[in-house]
Image (cartoon, rainbow, N blue to C red; front, side):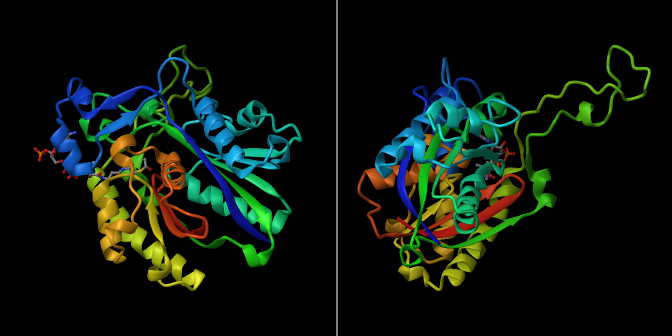
Length: 336
Ligand code: ACO
C-alpha cells in the first residue's frame, strides 16, 4: 500500500538560553556563534521537563492535526539517542498518550538521522506489515550529555521534540516517494558519546575481583566528543549526494521540489548543501537560529513550524535529509 503524512506537531522546553547567556559560562560570544553556526538561542530542559513529556506534547499535537485518536495508533516509533530509560522511551510514550490497543512501540537510535530512519521504518511497517497509523517521533535532550565547559560543542545543541503521523493509503496517494540511507561506523571517531573508557578497557572494579574483570563496573556515558571540522566535511559531501540519489529514485528533478528541509545542525552546512543542489534560498527551510541543533527532533520541529506558518502547503514536495553521529545519514523525498 501507499503511505502519507497526515499530521505534525512539536514541543520545546520553556527555558531559553541565548548566546549571551553562554558567554557567561564559557569563553565565547554571540558574534562568533552566530557567524560560525547561525544559532542565536536554544531551549534546554529544566525543572519537570523530560524527554517523554516533550515527545507526548509533540505527538498529541500531531494526532490532533491528523484527526487520529490515540486508540487508532498501531505503531509508535521513538527516534532518540537520549532516552529517559536505557531500555527505551517508546512504551512510556505509548502509555502516556493512551494508545490503548497495545500497539507496537520501540526506539530507534540513530542520532540526528533518527527521524529520517523513523520514516523509512514507518513506510516498511505499513507497506510490508499491514500497519495503518504510525506515529514517528523525533526527540532528544542532548543538553544532558553536553560538556557545558566545552565551547566547541555546548554552543551547538538544544532540546526539542517533533512528531508526524504516517497513515496507510491507496498506492495512487502515496506521499513517501523515496529514501536513500547510509551509515559508516568508521566515522564514529569524529562524533560520539561513549561508555566511559575505563569501563570498556576492563579496569578492575574497586571492590576487588576474584574473577579478573568480573563483575564489570557500572557504566555511564561520557559527554559528546566531536571533531567539528570532520563532521562539517562529512555533511557537505554526503548530504548532497544522498539527496541526489533520493531524487533519482523518486524520478524527480530538484526543480520539482518545493522545499529543502535539512537536519538543522549549522547554517553553513545548510547553505553549502543548498548551493551544491542549486536550491534558491527562498526554498530552504531553516529555524536553527531559535533552537540550535536538536538532533532527531530538528526535522519534524522545522516541518511543524513551516506547516503551521503556512509555508509548507498540502501537496508540496519536500526533500529532507538527516545526518550525524554513527556516522549515519539519509534522505527522503516526501509530499506534505
Ligand atoms: N566561541 C569562540 N571561539 C571558539 C568557539 C566558541 N564557541 N569554539 C571554538 N572556538 C575557536 C577555536 O578554539 C579556534 O581557535 P584557534 O583558531 O585559536 O584554534 C577557532 O575558534 C576556530 O575553531 P574551529 O573548531 O576550527 O571552528 P569551525 O569553523 O570549524 O566551527 C563548528 C566549529 C561550529 C563546531 C563547526 O565545525 C561545525 O558546525 N561542525 C559541524 C558540527 C555538527 O554539525 N555536529 C553535529 C552533528 S549532528 C549529531 O549527530 C549530534
